[in-house]
Image (cartoon, rainbow, N blue to C red):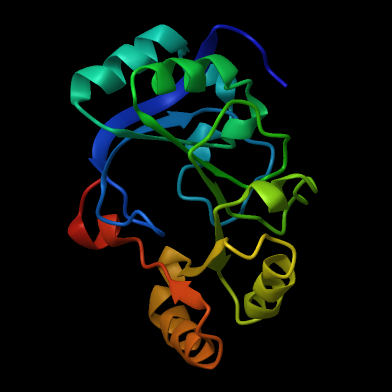
Length: 202
């Protein structure tokens, strides 16, 4: 766990959430650098090496969120749980800003979160503790075999956890149809379609 008052930041931006339960909601994104998962289809591979990105004080990050007028802050990556996020979430919550995280679950979570999106990857196993913390399970569907893999994770999360299947962007035309057929048979699942990419926004 990397512990300090600053965090390596690849980028920040204020946009709309394009995926999952909060699709369409305005949200300020903090994309932290550093990742030890290494998904072959990752669309932000430049986030993997934390050393090439600037270190930013957590207070500065929170001041920027407040200045944007956002009421939701999504911390993503990279793999954000590599870092100690206690101070960041404390400062955000002190400003009445909702704290959301998107994680592969490969590290123990730090900080206090209003919403945890758990998106496990085959390239590195998640820690056991993430399953009971997840509010939303999001499986990226790259191959048809990912459906059985999704079910195996859904069996481990809490009953209130929302279940999403999201086609990998480059294979969406093939995978969307497969996902829709699956959901018709298992209606507890939903499809997430990366709305922000269809809208052409970050």
